[in-house]
Length: 345
Ligand code: TRP
Image 1 (tube, rainbow, N blue to C red):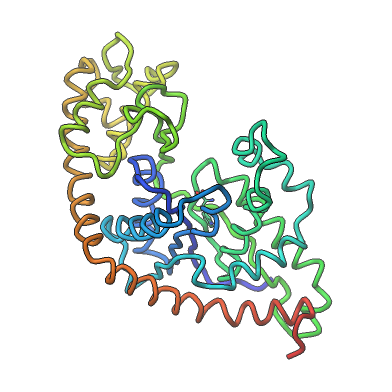
Image 2: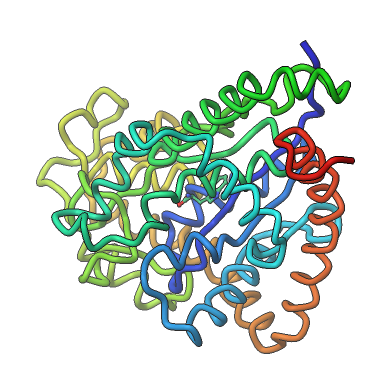
């Protein structure tokens, strides 16, 4: 077995209006990983267009997510920050993977079923093939580790299946070219710290989402202090005071969510938060929660705004990131093309 060099790849959609779920669930995990790994962070604009995007907004959202990632503390000099569409290898490798992955595999993807809903016949072909593009994102760099949330685990497993089928379908060609036997690594999920699933402020069983029609269900990264205070004040709870141990959160999804948000913002375990607030009323806890949320969110929002005032600077970061991404991707894509028989040498 060849060992592949450890490399992290992750992607984030350029959807406007980043919220606390995106921040705590993805971006802060990336910030932690950059200390220990070589990382590529990709704004996945090609994935975004699997559903309709207003073109002018897409341009803006790509810049805004890039700005937020940098404002949150990702260093674009040490690591690679870029947008997917600027490295053509993603689309090229995705096509090859369209021919490796089986219809049956993709038909089982729960995210497609959810997103396509009852109007399956009307969903874009891109939405169906979405996981193949995600596999291409990762494998174009032979990335070995992928930080993903729960909802993306199935897609990551599909990436492993694609890597494995490619490796075995083309084993003879790989050998004839004198390449390492396991051509693609089988990428592994990477969970940094406790899993952070941030739920809606109005329903502890639904994920915090930008598509929820009510803005009161989420804390947006650009919300001001008063808005954050009001949203937490109105957040759904139950009549009991906070429990003093984690077991007491069972069957209390809203309480569990607020404690989880506090824990993630403070960088503590839930148990620690409960040892401090066990027995408190929600009114008191919500004040503390607002305070820490404002303290964490406000500087990121301010820095995002500052960066957004200079789009040229953001674009320059993306251009530089794409060039460095291409330097890794080009040789991989070239050998893929040799292996498949698309080019001779
Ligand atoms: N599908 C991921 C999401 O919606 C985003 C994504 C695209 C991604 N390509 C990726 C994540 C590659 C990890 C690795 O969150």
